[in-house]
Image 1: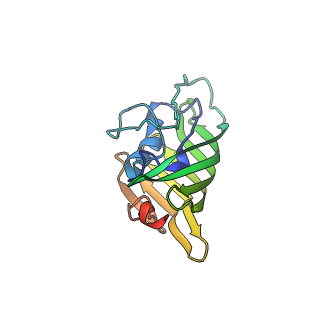
Image 2: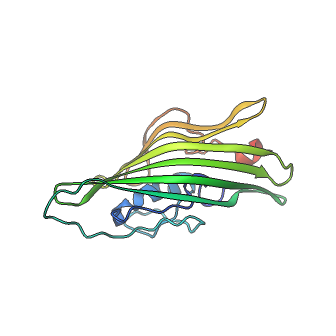
Length: 204
């Protein structure tokens, strides 16, 4: 089965302006994918799994005196983890590098109202039994509305290609979650988020 968090959102830092409600960005993915991020518990009912990812939410006191310009923070990361335990001693492991770009937007009172996270991810998945490797690229943006609690992911979350076979796992396009982690809109194939991608039977 897949590990507790999807490989692409693993070693993550967050902008300091991202307050506790912003945990949905992590939790909607954790709930939908069983997946890639870590954060402290907040008002959401979804558990945040502990993982090699560090998604630390730090409070920032808003300044009501004047409107604040957007705050941008770039956080690079790299590492490795077990993507899936397929049983009988067979593991899918992944090494990766990634760059997260966080942009936090504020209202006229200086309160954070929207967080946009852009991710460039480059991973290599290895099957421990066969030794076969699979490139695992990803380029996507998550937009979280801190007011209504919705989160939308746009882009290429999974696009794994095998030589001679073409695309074997694909999760691309747009998908939106409500404040409870339910999918309320999707466009494009979403094999990962809908749970139809069987990594262990595909990445042999």
